[in-house]
Each structure stands twice: as structure tokens, then as C-alpha cells.
Image (cartoon, rainbow, N blue to C red; front, side, top):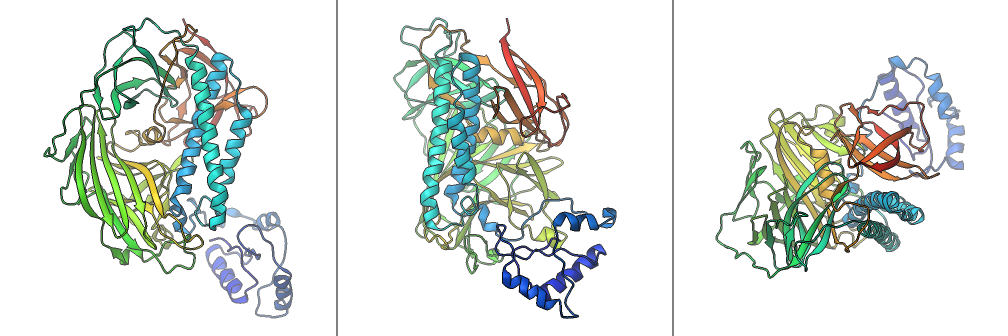
Length: 614
């Protein structure tokens, strides 16, 4: 238990807290933090006068004003004090994980875009001598970090705040895209291309800014025949506006292809085809009456659903004074009718990508969602557009599962946390809505189900059901909060083995950071048309940054260990990188030069200039 903040000199509250503290710790000295508000406001004159007067009462606890350091030092033997080895979960303001979904989307887009911009600006500077745009990147990062302040990112600010914040988000994202585009253009101008397969073929590059080889299906605007560097035509699929092709791009590098204009032959759609999707990793069956998932099996054939999955659930969510901040604790007692299916239509039927669209409606709102499956990705992706007009409602998507496990695991900043699914204590029961970043997973000894997302932060998991919270409809302090269009994606990943062995964490990064494709000029530079610039041996080491140091001219790699197992960083790739000093969080050298990264540890390393291998 910790002392409340933002409270006054309340004799009854202080006495009760002091008694509870003594019962749990044996100490007769407790900490009380009087003051105004939750942002550092100190005690008022009235509070100090109240404290002085109450000291004259023999029933009032004795007060002494001093520093926190002095109080903690006087606690003495800490071994006798209870230990809290868990997160400091706030049993309040759970709506902040979801309110004002546009702010959450801006935040994820900005963080992702700036990471990518730093990576490619670094490589462009190292490989081509291009200027590193430090000033522009710093300005974009500062705008992004400023908007993570409460109450902007939590979605609990007045409308005027968002009139200022939205353009700042947009500018930060635009700056990141511009930096990345200029870096990729500089790299493309230094690539030496081999002879094209025909006189009309044009170079095309696909960039991967994450470690590890990535196999996926990419979309190129327009209709093209696609060739690899040896001149072999690659299997492709035409949509009305795009060409789809399956590729594998090496870690932190690029793949060169050739494209040649083609007359498209678009495969005819069979509207009566079975509502079934499958690839080498999963199979799924869709209910023709609801558009929900009837079945979901992993690659070993295990059924992961215990009831209809990907089911939208609506709840009444009102009656809270802190409207934008709080979800009604009793919301599950007030369910609303589920959105009704209006249509279910095949849009694509392979051979590289399948797309099945369902449209649902509820009152004044419309949900358009595409089930998207490719031959190369291990997940079933749900691309979703919602025209949201509901007020004081909560929208979740639910996956009842056959998985029974005592904990579910959620991504947190540079790590993961396991939370109980069957609460045994009041503190555990209070976690009926929890925050997470890009993924949550429920696994048992046979495997499990992960939900990955590209801009959502609220989850819950109880009674073998994993749910992602999508939208709310608060009206205070912003009467227009969440009204309008929302575009986002989430993916479901059924897997055998544990979440660690199944690679849930790196897959969630890939969902959030797709490959980038762009045309390239014919050039005769020093770079190869396909290249692995930087890779490493341990999949559980996920990058946080590859950038120039804030001071000086060092280059650094920052990563973290993502599955709770010690790993050794060994760099690989087409260029010989050397690891210099190990750095602290302020990018200053440490006394240790170890390349071993402990479980969940954030580690920074100086990268020395690479040389081209023969």
C-alpha cells in the first residue's frame, strides 16, 4: 500500500491509513502526502493551518514534516517490511487505455516512423555520406514525447488541447516519413544494378528495417511483371489496383527486383466459395450468419476457439464522474446488442492473398472489416474501419479460447508481464482491464493464441477469454471524443509452443513495421542491389534504436532482451561491424564491454564504422 496523493489533512483518513500501515508493516511511522492535484502541487496554507490545529488534539496522529529520504532512512531494517514484486497498477482511470483512439494511433505511428527514420538516416550517412538530419529528428521526437503528457495521450483533455496536439502529431510523423524517404533515395542512388531482364524493366527496392529475414506478401501500386535479379519471373497476383508478390528480405537490408508493365488478368471471384481461409500456419472458418470466426486451428490442427471468435461486443459505459478516464466497473452487467451483419463478400481469392469483407452495423455506426490471409504470414489479419457514432458505449472484440492458463502475458515497454487470469486477491481482481502495447498472449503447455495490434492499448483476459478493447464514447471533457472514422488492424496468431518459442514479440514488431518498397534509378554505385546491412544472432534481442549519438559522432545500437533469457549480441551481415564501448542510458561509456544482455535488460552499444566484406 502507498500513501495517497493530492489529499488534504483529513483526520479520519490519516488515522485509518496509519492503522492499516501499522497492521501490515509493524511500523508506527507512516507517510502522508498532502497537496493539491496529481502533478506535484504542494500543501496549501489552509492545510498547514489545519495540521497545526489538529496537533492540539490527543486523538490526532502526530505529524512531522520532513524529506522523503529522511523518512525512508528511519524505517531501519527493511527485511521486515512486506515486498511488492509486481507492477504499480493504478486501480482507477482504466478508460485512458482506450479513450480518444486517434491519439493512440498517432502515438504508435510516430514512434514507429521515427524508429524507421533513424535507422535509414544512419545507414544513408554511413554508406553514402548523406547528412544525418539530427535537428529534424530531435524536433519530431520532442513533439511526440510532449504529446505523451497527460491528458493528451490518455484522451482526457478538453477539445482545445487536441486542436493543438493533432497538427503536432501529424508534423512529427510527416518529418519522420520525409527523413526516411530522403535516406532511401540516397541509398538507391548508390546501387550498382546488373543487366535488366528486358529493355523496359525498371529497378524496384524493398527495405526491411528490422533484424531477421522477413517473408511476406507485398503490394506494388499498378500492374507489373516482377523479376528477381537473375531474371526469373516471380509468381504474382493482380488486384484491381495492385500487384502482389511474395518476397523474403534479409534483416536490416534490402531486396532488389525488376518490374515491367503488364496487362493485368484479374482472377474471377467465386461468390459461393466456402468461407474458409488456410495457409501453412493456420486455418479459419467464418460463420455466414454473423461474420465471426467459427473455427481457428494452428498448424498442428489444434482448435483454439471455444465459441465464436472475433466477436464484437458492445456494453453500456456510463455513470462515471471521470467520464473519459474511467470505464464503468459494472459494464459487463449492461451488454448491448452485438453489431448485425449486413454483408459478407469475397474480394480476393489467392493464390497469394485472400480477402473476405464483412460489413456490420449498430445504431448509427458501421464496421467494415477484412479478413486478410497471405501465403507467407503466420497470422490472420483483421483490417478494420469503423464509423463510430456511439455515446457512452464500450466496444471490445472477444476470443473465447480452449486455452486454460493461470496467466496471460502482455507486452510492456521493453519487456512483458504475466497477469493472472483467475484472480485470488483484491489487487488481482482489480485488474479487470489492463494496459499492453503491441501484443497479448494466452498460452498453455500445448500452445496458445496471441492478439497483435497496430494502435490499441487496452485488454482483458478472464475465464479463457482474451479481449481487445477498441473504442469508447465518453462526452466529458470532450463532447466529440472518438466520433468519426477509425482505421486500425489487429491480427490473431494461433501457435504451438510457448509465446517465447513462437516468436510473438518480433512478429508484433513486424505487424507494426511493414516492409517499404520504392522505385530506384539506374545507377552504378558501390552498393549491391540486395544486401544485409546489419543482423544479429539472437531473435530475442529486439531493436529500440539505431542512430547517431546525441553528442559527438558515435553510432549506436540500442536493444532489449524480450523473452526473459540471457543472450549474447553477435553482429552479422554483409558488412563487418565492430562493437565498441557499451553505453549507459545517457550514451556514456560503461566500464564493462560485455556483449551479454541479461533477461529483460535494455542495452546500448557503440557501433564502429563497417567495412565491406569480399
